Length: 143
Image (cartoon, rainbow, N blue to C red):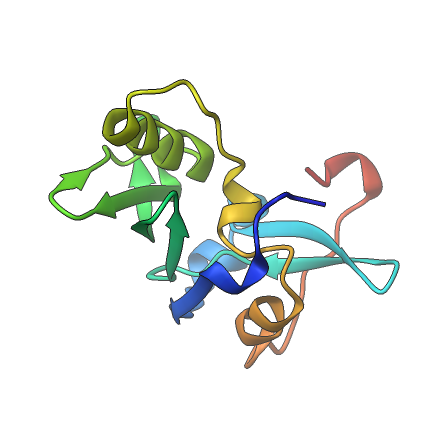
């Protein structure tokens, strides 16, 4: 369980499911494995998904885009706080942590999936809305 309050995360936009990303050869990068009611479930990381989170009194906006410097078919994570912004990173943790450290001049590390609200059942239900098919993976493929 994280130490932060779950009420400081707001899903501003659930984004969209993109067939060739979410169901194509790179689908495993676009789904996040989580446990709901003791069941492992895959939740889509949607293109255009936008989250607002308040950390240390500062609002951070996290957006999911297609691609980052290492791979164009994987999710890219972009973080913005006021006049500051991160590079497009290959993980939410990297985007959020780098910006947080830049603003607050410290070495705190943040957990991207938790900060995206992927442990919040209300956000998960919103991201699953309209999903007609959830892929499934053998246990050793789940991140």
